Image 1 (cartoon, helix red, strand yellow):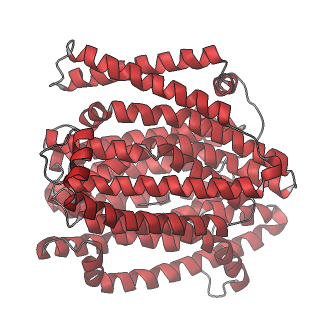
Image 2 (tube, rainbow, N blue to C red):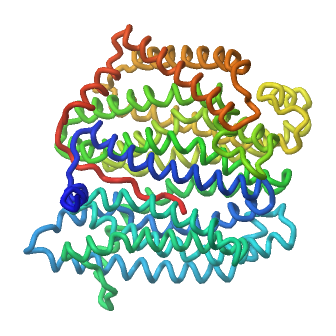
Length: 559
């Protein structure tokens, strides 16, 4: 048994689909724990003030994490580390990492101290709709959470070494222990410490995220230390490479900050509704879109650096087809089964039926951009592999600005045009519920994501026109199958409504689960009949190793 565990810690994985499955399994485990975490939060507090303050308190530390800690992300550092591997360059590599560590610590300390002092002013920007009492709690929690980007940044740095040594299983455990610690904080620290106990759990999770990698780094012989003579030329290279990526990532986090500020002015619990629905829609994104895009990155980098642009484009198209193949059914089933999904995962204790209906409606609106978000991750990494970090930044800036403007516009129209409000309330069956205007935020988010995909797709197609491969057939097949799945699931919901007691957990779970499974089975049979290529690819990947590649696991992109 011990030997088996050791082999698992040292196992190398290859092939686009195998690497994607590895990442998907890791993401799936962490996302399951995240759902357990959210269920515990929802059942304990409901969509109310406590969760509003808790979720809002992450916003400032989150943006600091993106702006500073992403400078030491694995995707940035691994090429530098790989270049310097080998006994003859071991000291040079240690000096390089020590310089990066010293720079990161100094920058993080300065930024954190500034944020600590300015937190009362930032509270007026991030949560303008909070009462004075809630703002004070927000300030206190946000200041405590400034420890998290510090610890997770160190974890990123060490994770770069872990992944370079190909100990992917070790790194794959980090998000799992992170969520376990947050759950521990809720179960065991909330009662003695109040809402601060929840934050202690987050900090504990960030600490374990870091220390679990230390033994592997020590064994590697590559161990960064604080240095008083840093190599500023190396620091400049890393910052120059990572800055566009950092700014690209920060756009989405700034967008979330704006939406949280808008939600703070709506009904109590609106921030909780927005965050819980956002977390739910992020599950398929992490398992599907992120896994395929990250798994493809090393091969894309190699193909482009070798000048093989034809296979570079074909590889992106292949990964894109699979993202579409998996994501379109998710979109369809999330829209049809939204109430069953939310009620099953979150609907317990203090989380009321009103909370469920609003969260389900917000989830449906987020779901319309699930495919777009997955493909955006792929195209962004395609551009990174091609050494072009500016185009994704420009596209993100434009689409992010449009989303912000639409957030204000949609909220204004929703409050002033009864017909517009009635349309959305009737469409998602939330008539007569206070706070329905929060639905305009996921709507603005999804429209912005769809615009983002349209722009980056057009730019990519224009740049690689001579190598472009059409994906119309795959899209039409996947779309037809997704629509068929949705129709079957919707019909069976009505049938099972008379079979199960949907006022109970098991009743509503079985209603949604069996309807969804039936829809999926019909969709698969339909695709098999059409001879769908993605079905064949997945079947082959499950029984054989397609090719050798080195996956780079995704960096944690938020607290």
